[in-house]
Length: 81
Image (cartoon, rainbow, N blue to C red; front, side, top):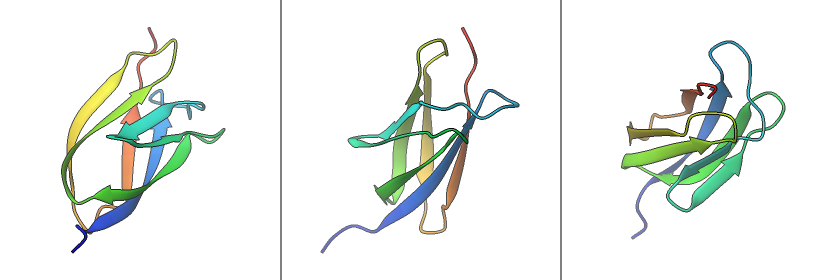
């Protein structure tokens, strides 16, 4: 039996503006944001996971989040170095 998974829309900003070309990852599930700062992580397992977001010129982002079957979006704010 496969564990339950969900697809999550991720939106990355600097607090005001979208940030493109950010690598977002939960384990080995990765995606890169486009010009509007968004991407989709597919088949994310339900439960507690660690999400990371990295881009040169910004502080690395790491956050533990609880993913449920109702989780559809995650907002990430990156701080410039």
